[in-house]
Amino acid sequence: MSTPHAPQPERRYSYLGPRGTFTEAALAQVPEAVGQEWHSVNNVGEALADVAAGRSDAAMIAIENSIEGGVSVAQDALATIPGLRVVGEYLVPVSFVLVARRGTTLDQVRRINAHPVAYAQCHRWLDAAIPAHGHVPASSNVAAAAELFDSALADAAIAPPGVVGLYDVDVLAEGIADSDTAVTRFVLVAPTSRPVPPRTGADKTSIVAELSVDRAGALLGLLEQFSTRGVNMSLLESRPIGDALGRYRFVIDLDGHVTDERVADALLGVRRFSPGVTFLGSYPRADRVPTVVEERYTDAVFVEARDWLRELLSGAPVD
Ligand SMILES: O=C(O)C(=O)C[C@]1(C(=O)O)C=C[C@@H](O)C=C1
Image 1: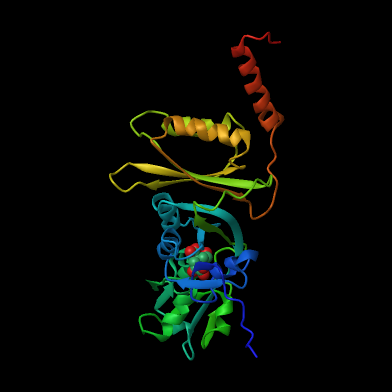
Image 2: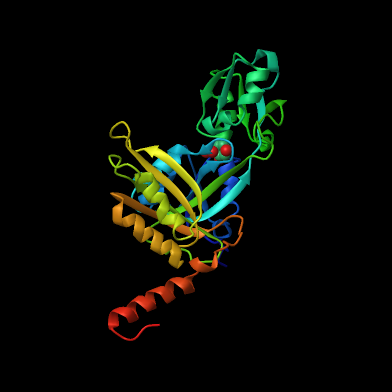
């Protein structure tokens, strides 16, 4: 009699681990990832390199936090590693506790292990409760707690509340984040060989654009491409290109899908003058809130205007 075998995973997903991170919670929101192989990595660059090299089918990465802003390491990696495409967006509410090896008391804490994005979200509490603390950077929120047992470099760690079920720690303080409504935005990144997800009417488009800095009004010119087509921006961040002082690229999220006439037309406008524009992807918004489009920017109005021009050029009588 043959032994029944469990189905083998067909796809591999890289995420910032170890188990219990907010990144893992974001990956758990992806229906197609359930039952597949989840590969824990130590940093965002490693997750994206897995996808670029074909070792993983997709990677989940944090891209923006409601308090700390853009996750610069993720924005820079997406802007510079070729062959990557954002195919989904996910939101995870984040909150933090301060944990320590059993028996440690709050007044003994001097050095705190924390992921830099988590540390930045707990400033006010830390400055008030442990004013003279030092920060020991960790690769993730859960790694911060795990490392308490690998080395004596830190006395306590900032971690997600769920860490108490994973490690033998005492909770020294709960709810230590500066906001109790903090949210981190994650994106699922696949290779460019994967088709752009179809338009849903509640989509975002992410691009990275460079500008010639020796021209007055260059940034205004970039923004006008969107405003004159009724395209709303939900994110605009500047990141240094890194080759010289004063050279920046702009990371931009737009409301709409690349197949929306107004978005496509705006991208053509950007392409005409930006020395480098990268399309990172169009994907359904995590909140599923449909984009409201003013009548004069609907697809039908763009199509009508194009037909009008075509007729005009064909010499046929026009109204
Ligand atoms: O996924 C985790 O738990 C992480 O440690 C990463 C990360 C991030 O990169 O922003 C995720 C969410 C929190 O805002 C802080 C840290």
